[in-house]
Length: 501
Image 1 (cartoon, rainbow, N blue to C red):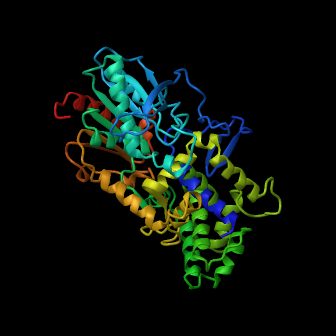
Image 2: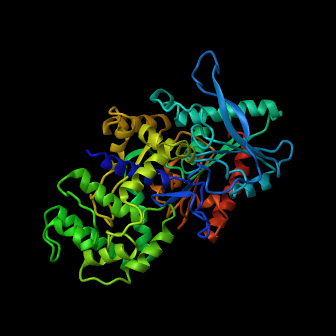
Image 3: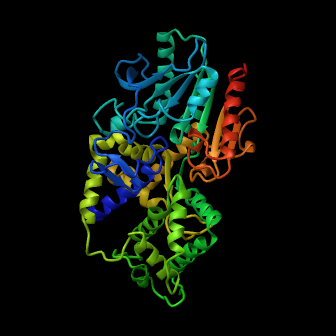
């Protein structure tokens, strides 16, 4: 496979990485982007700093243990960043502990709705940055031996060790700790109560994809349902276009079209696709679906896309979709470009492998998806809006081998995913006193727990209609969310006072 293909496939993985961030909002439209780089729908500062500017609370340094499995103790330590705020704290109050996730943790301490909960319960706020993200790097060595210490299990052990040491140094014996987290960090919050039940009294796990999977059709399944809920005419136009293309790929006619060679011209695209090559074909459909429609907060993008697709003309589903793509700036006259695709791809790949790319979270999350979780988006066989089987997670997964070595085959990654689910028990999490929060319009929610019947009655499930990824961590915009956050707040108090927790 040509090097340019390897770069393209790595960029597909970046789309998974960038669509995982829960703690980094979009920048303002009027902010200068001269010092930023755009990677599959997200902007990153080229200097590796988080999108939000540095907040008032400055980080402190904790001497973290590198190897928690060493029988002789912590022989090697490294600098891990953490933040503390005591604005609402009263002696004897609980400690609210937020897990840093797959990116810099700078913004977490001074933002988000957990401040309201802290004010209610006179809690101290503490944030611990995840190893190998932001500026909390145990080593600059990116050898396989070092990368294998970047795991969720070590992140949980880091938290336990920090809680023990911080409790002792600050004289907090007897204080209750409450774990918080959103997205991957939501997993960590839930798993903390499962694996270290004596370290945290309760946990609030927001939008956590607890079940690791290789192929992940649930993401586009949710996006499809958002499209249908917001604009049925738009839904039909998208469905007809992809259904037509899938029919041609499968050897059937579609209206006046009879061969796959007619797809690219009909879409007014410049790329050359070998539809007889499985990887080429799946990559094409992946980019066509994910690049235009995938978003952790899908409703805004769906409204924008549907406004265009329902306004363009065309004589058939493919020409309509092609005119939509051109109207959205994808395709059309490909001879005029500010920067060639090769140049842009090389710039992005260089960023991923740079120190700044590591700080942004791109490099670390790429590794964890290959080594622990997968989460590789695939076509949705339930609704078929973007085709019923147009692409699998393989175009993502194959990039693991290019970046980390030939041992990272599909079978190896699937084995690692199975180990993750065996260790944490997936959606059958063995815990109590955990508040599990998900939103109907969150593309990740199918991997989490959305109904009380799916977990122990000792846990609380909060499912919010039309809420998107980690919306409960933000100020409420709907009455449903206000009610959900009021429930979360009450349940935190109930669990804090429950001797069984």
